[in-house]
Length: 409
Image 1 (cartoon, rainbow, N blue to C red):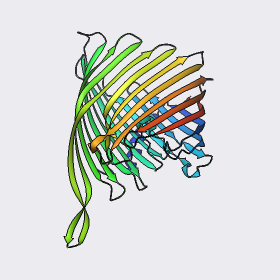
Image 2: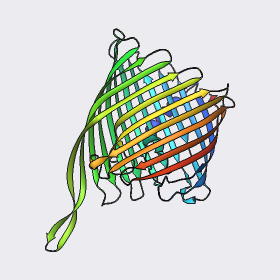
Image 3: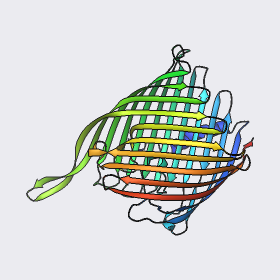
Image 4: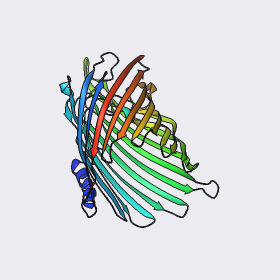
């Protein structure tokens, strides 16, 4: 399904949030972030490592309003990227997002979200997917609806729908439409286990991939999954959650082939093929929230879009994050993450993928005041392509200053 949500729809949905934010007691927060960085492998390439300096300035504005029944927000920012040598990567990105949540009664709440992003930086998806997308300009529209209903003192049901659309103008990329519907049933299990909630998650999703060139395949993927799990508060400081389940994936795709129309004369036509795949899905998280020390460890496995290429991957992610307050205003932070993206034997896409990605990122944050903070960071990244038996490494250093000043109307 192409263009279900046109830009006008997104502006309308954002307007719902904006209208709520214009009422009394609105908080308006202008902000600006300035960052300078050195990257020794801009394109994260294993054969052609290109280093450069990048300067980024991001002005933004956030509007929020909270009442007894309503929680609304609108965020707009414009990341401006300038390179010392690679002028062709200079760009002004755009990010718009908004949300509106309304509590109809103590038992019923609904929310709506919408957003638009235009970006083009090669590393824009690295920390989300572990994959390098390239420099093609992406236009991403997104929208979602969700609702929660308290069935009883012990049981709550949540239903959500989300739509996302990625479009590229340049050849060599694949446009993607993504729709998903989730139903989550949460049960308070305190009669058996203290501070424990069980949950059942049913999910259905549909992906449609439209290539920018004829010689690329068209893909239509439908996926259904079920997971069971629980969330447990071990103490006031520790919490643990885990879900495990199974998925069923069905893929229909088009491939070009030659068809004889006369002796010695052929034409190119599209033929349809179908594949089915069954696999496991799961997620788990452990967190600690102390006064001066915070830490989390999470794991995740499911199918996901490969980002600009024709198909899906099975993605496994492990992430660790810890923050420590050394002084009243000085925080130390360390993050480590591992991504495994696979589509072996072309189960989920025609482009076979088998890549491992690692990131190690220590950084310092100094909170000079409520409105102003300074950050310094180093990040090491490595991508191992196990199909081509090649690897790429990247070292990234940056300094950043962030200023924001909340104001009440």
